[in-house]
Image 1: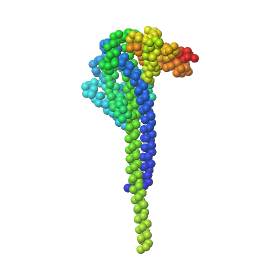
Image 2: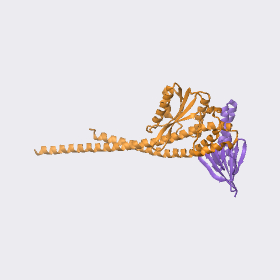
Image 3: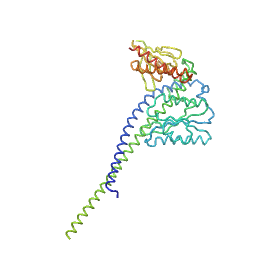
Length: 293
Length: 138
């Protein structure tokens, strides 16, 4: 049996840990609110943007834009968006697993895979493999549109130079505070969503009547890189929110585990104390008996 | 009262303006253009500059940076990377940004780097647009 002092120290230690985890839980909750707000603020922009894209591409051949060109796939680029920090449960592991699976698929088909890692965790995981083409770390804390832009520009340049023929993006999709799952999307070549909601389909039908300034093709040339910014920024926002939600849940679980542990240890402590007292009493009674005798 | 058109200015940070207004004018690809109620469907890219709209006789000015705008169903939507009301503009910051951009532009011209030059030019344009609006506000 552990000595009284040992158990007491251990209880103290676990208590301190639970203080830290519960503080982290609260910080994550506050950050999550901010991240969710950012995501919601961005939503109207994406919706309008996608609407306009569908309108415009409805009556246009996709072949004429280099960013929409469908080539025979030889090299696949995967953009992996993870968090910069750990301690958020299996969040990053899930994304990395999904990335691994996708890589495995392409490699089995004999295609080359190169990676762009956004966020420290992805880079740390894949660095040893030597397939990371570019890494952006320490930007997930407070990123802005221009961060997304520089990433998008780099990926687009790589695609245009025919260094990659298809680009995927993997990020942590925020479904709810409790559920985040890795999501794989095709970034390049750009394929605007066909159909979509009724509203966009209707608007698409009327697109022929639009006055374009400059010409539709020139507008498209401006819009396509913007579209990539939007996609990447969106994926980063989702990952950011998911990260905080995952951390919140993980830290909540940890705090609960600490509480259970403290409970068990307190029981143990009381038992040990009781045993000590009993032993002492036995001694005294034994001594008294001996004196009487 | 004359008919109105619905104006929406949307940035990645959310909708900045959402209002029924009388007239909107903005710097388009081919120069300044104005839009009144029931305008024909229209799609244009937008340059850095000033967006003006009038509502019930009072005029509001916004600094907007690049993006595009769409007119359809008596609604005009601006999708821009940033938009600021005149009173929100930080003049000191804009002045600093202007100086910095000018310096960078000179450096880029010396080295003849195209990428840096475009970037510096864009930054300079934004700073100048901000200052222009801010000065008019005072």
